[in-house]
Each structure stands twice: as structure tokens, then as C-alpha cells.
Image (cartoon, rainbow, N blue to C red; front, side):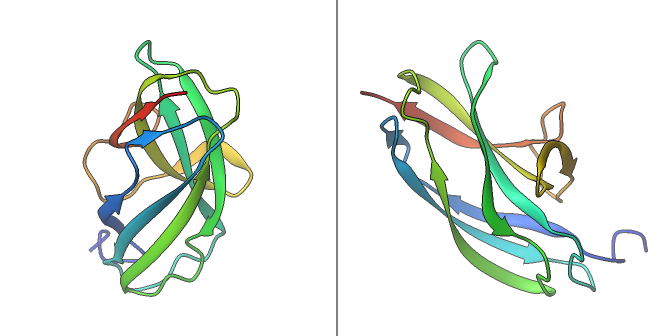
Length: 130
């Protein structure tokens, strides 16, 4: 019963460029589904970060994409993820989180596997080159 109350978001599909350059703006196409019976009533935002091979967080960005009011059913969105100009070249893991609009420390869970220790979700890999 608890899993049916409120909202329950599932990320069904995500698509993004895997080979990118510092300073580029990456369009991230996502297909979400709200399996609950109500929309989210808070302004939680979709955020991204890159994790380098040493486990350090880089390019943490809270986007303008909000889940506020997403009705039950499918939702397709495209989110822009801007990489910093001074991002070092290398191989990274791309992680996504649904966070409070002004804080990356308040992450809400979604109904997907791949959750990290701090509540983010690994969604793929990205290679940054000059």
C-alpha cells in the first residue's frame, strides 16, 4: 500500500552523448513514469554530476527541470546539462539525482536500481576530451 500512495517515479530510459568536450551543453533525453496515484507537490529538480575514476564528484549541476506536478503516467523531457569550461579530460560515470531545488544534499529516492551510497543513480559513462 505504501508503494502506491503519493508519487513513485521510475526512470525508464535516458539518452545522452557519451563523447563530450569541456564547456559543452549536453541534451539529456529522459523517459519517466509516475507509477503512483498523485503528482509530486514539491519543487524537486533533476541534477547531474560526473564521478571521476578516483570517485570524486565533478560538474555537479542542478538543472531547471522540475518534477513538480508530474501526473501519474509517462513524461518525456529533455534536460540541458552544462559542463564547466575547466573540466579535465577523462572518463567519468554520469550520475543523476532528484534533489531539492537549492541543495544537492537532499536527494529523494526513485524506483530504480543503481542507487549510490548517497542516493544518486549511476546512469552511464561519459568521456570528456579536449
